[in-house]
Length: 270
Image (cartoon, rainbow, N blue to C red; front, top):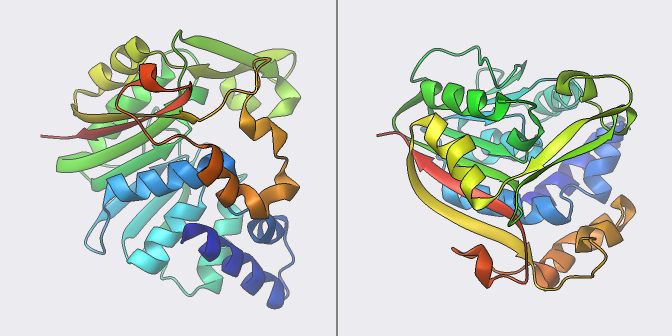
């Protein structure tokens, strides 16, 4: 559903003479291999309706636009950099979505510019792992602060049986400056162990843990590689099919999986 929405969005933009990078990307690969799974599960667990005020903390923006456009929720779509924000402000105008229903804003998850108890739904897809130092725990406290009683929070992060931090060259990703450097090897992300999920995310939030679902692949190609690395962006049209073939069914236990690679958390504010 979201994949087709992204394709239509890109085609509509190009037909209207807006041949932008984001429009072309949406036609070719609106959702990559991992996002196909993460977006679907997040959407299902979030359960957002037109009555909800939703906060997206730094996630890929297609889902936030969909929630505002097709679900009718009031959505605040945030990112620490403006890299993703402007294209979706343009899509909002193209789709005639009221600005009061789709807010696109620059924000740091460690210091969210919203009042207490402002949102009934919050989600963050593959973001928290990129915040250096204790920033992921700080972000969780901020998320909890902005949630109303009864509000639901859905998160996805990378997982490994033994947690670890990964570093990359600063010119390899656009938010390197926010990660603490502009040259050399810079913190890129952490992979959370089962203990890390509790100590770094759940406990600092003070929220009630409702569910953990582990995500991964049915097969392991070996050599430390993931299936996703064999499918570059231009193969985007087959990513949903590849996801159905190679992604394992989400499991409550990572020990039952051939290759666990991610975790989805569902939390609630009592």
